[in-house]
Length: 73
Image (cartoon, rainbow, N blue to C red):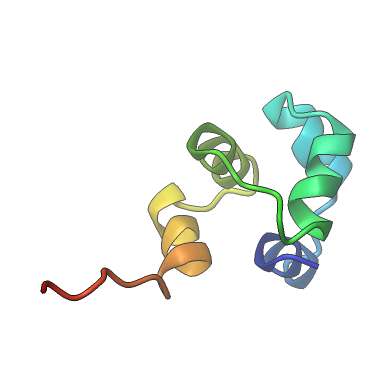
C-alpha cells in the first residue's frame, strides 16, 4: 500500500467515491493507493485533496515532505 492509500484508509475514505468525484478511474485509484512505483501527478493530488476535503498543500507535505535537496558542491 502507498502512503496515499494509508491516508485514505486511515480516514475511511471510499476510493470509488473519490474516483467518481475526481473523474479518475477506479483502476487509476487502485494504482495510486496500492502500487508504490506509481507516480502521482499534481493534478491528481489536487483533485483527490479536494474530494476528501483536505488542503492540497497539506496532502502534498504529508506525502512528499520527507524529500530533501541535494547538498551544494
